[in-house]
Amino acid sequence: MLSRRKMLGGAGAISAAVAAASVSKVAMAALPEPVIQTKPDTMPPLVPNTGRPYNPVVTLNGWTLPWRMNNGVKEFHLVAEPVVREMSPGFKAHLWGYNGQSPGPTIEVVEGDRVRLFVTNKLGELTSIHWHGQRLPNGMDGVTGLNQPGIPPGKTYVYEFVARRPGTFMYHPHADEMVQMAMGMMGFWITHPKGKHPLIDEVDRDFCFLLNAYDIDPGAATPKIMTMLDFNLWSWNSRIFPGIDPLVVRHMDKVRIRVGNLTMTNHPIHLHGHEFLITGTDGGPTPKSTRQYEVTADIAVGQMRQMDFLADEEGDWAFHCHKSHHTMNAMGHDVPTMIGVDHRGVAKQITKLIPDYMVMGERGMKDMTEMEMPLPDNTAAMMAGTGPFGAVGMGGMFSVVKVRKDQKRGDYSDPGWYQHPPGTVAYEFTGALPDPARFKADVSPGPGSMPSMAKPAQDVEVKVRKPAGGHSGH
Image (cartoon, rainbow, N blue to C red; front, side, top):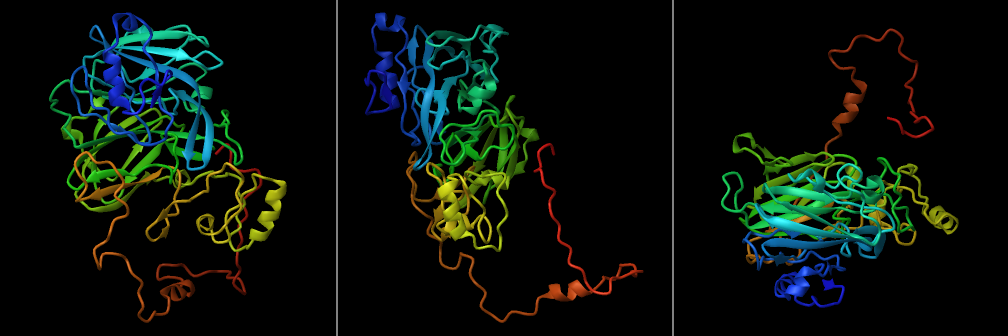
C-alpha cells in the first residue's frame, strides 16, 4: 500500500492512519494524501487507532481505506482512475476503480461519525459517487444532474454527512453508470454500531466482498460495457476462482460474511456444511424474530446481505453462487456442444486462425480442467482450481471456507488443505454390481398408463435440435 509520494508504505494501512493523524495544521487544511493499493492480496484488518473503536472487517482480496481525523471529522480520499486488476494469476484486466484497485477500498466508520470524503476524478469523463443505502442530505446522494453536477476530469469534489445507522452499504458512480460500473467502479462501506446493539451480535471474524461481473473476450483485457446479461466473468471483488482467497476461520468462531450485489442479475450464494442466519439487509439489522437458518441466500441486484454462522464443523467447505454458469471463467455463450467428439487436434489448428476460438470438451466443460485445451492469451481457464483430490471443476464465484481447530485467533493465513480423519472420505464401492433397474423400467408402460391405440411398428429415437438464432429475448 503506497501513497502517491510513497510515504505510507511498508507497515501498511495501520501505520498509514497513524501517520495521517499526526500531520501539521497546514497539512490538515490541504487535501488528504491518497493511499493506493496495487496488490490483489487480502490485507489484514485495519484496527482503528483514532476515533471510536470497532471490530474491523476483512475485505476478500481487498483492503480498508485509511483515514485522518480533522477536528473530529473522519476524512477519506478516493481517486477514481483506470487500474489494472489481476483477476486471477496471469490474467489481467484493464478496469476503472479507486485508489489503484477495483473494487475500491472498503470504507469503515462508526455510527454517528461525521465523514468527509474527497473524490478526485482521474478518468476522461464526468463521474460522481452514490453512497448506496445511506441516510444523508439530498445534495450528497451523488446522482449527477439530480443532486449535484458531475465531477469533471481533474477536479476534486467533497461529500460530507453523518453515518446515521449501522449496517452494510456500498458506493458506486451515478454518472454514466452502465459504463463506469461495467468497468469496475464500486466499493464497500461498513458502518459499525457505536456500542452494544440489541440486533447486532459481536463476531470473531467479519468478511465482506462485492459480487461483480465483466464481459472480457479471450485475448482481450478491457470489458465490453454494452453487455446486458451475457457476462462471461463472474467475480467476487473482481477476482475469479482460483484467484479468490479462502475465508480462513478458527473452529467455533462466530463468523459474519457481508455480500453486496452490483451485477445485473441475482446470485443464490450457498455455503456448505453450515447453516447461517440473515442478520442484516439493505435496511439494517433484521429483527431476531424474522431470522431463520438458511444454506443459500438469494441476493438480488443492488442488495446487500449479512449472514452470520458458527464455524462448528472442521474442514474445507465450498462457498459459491449456485447459478452454475457463474462458477466458470471466460464462459462463452455461443459455445458449440462437442460432447462425444474428440476435436482437440482441430481446435489447435483453428486457434491459429481464430485466437479466441473455444469449444466445450469431448466429455463436457470439465475437460477444460483436465486436458490441455488450447486457450487464447490473457484468458483464464474455465475451471482451473485444483484441490487435494484433483481438479475442483469450478471457477468464477467460488471459494472455500477453511475451518481449523489449530488456527490462532486473528490468524487469516491459509492453513493448507484439510487433513481428513481416516474413514471420513467417500470411497469406491468394489462389490458386485447388479443389473441396472433402468432397463426394466424402459420396457414397462407403468401400472397407471393407458393402452396405446397406434403404437409404432418399431421404436423411434427422436432427436431434438434447437432452432437457430440463439436464445436472446427469452
